[in-house]
Length: 435
Image (cartoon, rainbow, N blue to C red; front, side):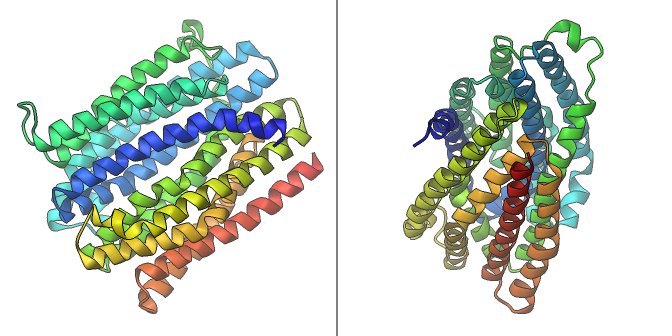
């Protein structure tokens, strides 16, 4: 194992563990909600489908912030580092307020357009309005975490997220089921618990940011801080992720037409297979920041080495995890439901996810590497074509027209990932060769 691979592992392992923590809390939340009813599972899944769009904005802004900060740290321009940190906070506040107001006042028509009605709609709205109404917390968590990681400290966000996730679980447990004298609030309790835990995480991360080279100084926070390059870097990244998440909402609409049992099974399968992607996402975080620093110094050989190591390591880890989860699938799904139709749908998700892992890992790593080098346009174009022309069209044809249902939808997802991997790999190879 070469030196860059060792550095990448050292930097990425905390990010992977942080993802594991967050996913585990999501897994436990889903497990607790499943104990309420399949209706509750469908309602929260519907809300989380839209919240994933919001999360895409958060992640995109965090990636833009961390790569730009890393570029300037690599060039040792500390004055600009402080200025961009302040600009990132201002931009986060503006986006958080806009998304929060949008969520509170337009939630109902959003979910009606997605096909939700009756009891599902009634259960979805309060959960979504609470969590999405506090979007500013979601954004600040991502951005402050990105600022800390960009300075080379990947452990502090891990430790802070450990505290946040433990609190999230405890708050949810108490408020969902009405323990310790609190009222029994069901899925609304889960929403409140999530927001309380995020608020505590934001405070801890801000205090940590203030002890790093990326600290936010008053003179930049209350003075003029150009955000043009930050916005321009963030927009195509947001475009790529929003295209993906908006497409997912269309896929949700296709799947919900197959019945609430299939939709709930798909939700359970996605909850379980979230673990499959953690290694790739964590490695992509490390690749983005390391490549951004090397790109600031024009070290192309190291960029190639880091990217190659990221793909190989994440591919091996993700495929191994996916295999274990698939073969243990019948037992894991039984923890969520005894409904045969829902369990079968969940197993389809587990199978296709397992098969897809080497490809998905490549998509994550090459996207991160290109974005770190300032090319956010290629991932955006590849995702737009892959999602809206390949995945959605094929999902409808295979799933609905040919009546393959959930299997057809997930085969379309696999084909989309293969397409995007090929495009990203070709463009990346040309870019590092030209450099």
